[in-house]
Amino acid sequence: MEWTIDYLEKDGIVYMKTSGPADWDQNKKMSETALALGRKNGSHRFFVDHRKLEHGLSILQVDDLPKMLKQIGVTSQDKVAIVFDPASPISNTFKFFRDASFLASLQLQIFTDKNEAIAWLKLAK
Image 1 (cartoon, rainbow, N blue to C red):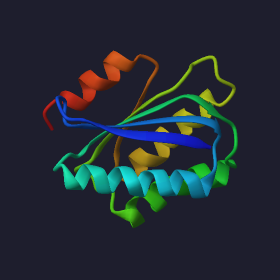
Image 2: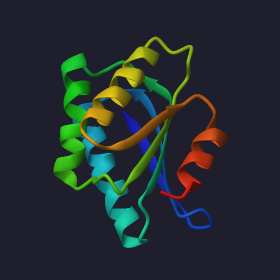
Image 3: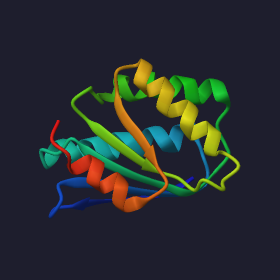
């Protein structure tokens, strides 16, 4: 799994972009790096572009992702917007992850449109 992280200063959003097969360790490292960048800039808004992400995690690993996110410091104050390709063979995995995150009291939503995701992130809490 390859990834890049930027801070969109104008919008106060940490922007992550991934490609290749999903990988647990790389996902954790990316999440830790993004969280640190957000904290450094006083931001609780995270945009994840997973449109080029490929299958790589088991359903049990996906179910454990919210727990891992909480362990590294993600709180209910953080907002995470994930954009994915609805034609992707793993589109149902994103829906499952959204539901598992809701049960873990995390503010995570999935989108197929980048502009809708950014608009949701900008909404007041």
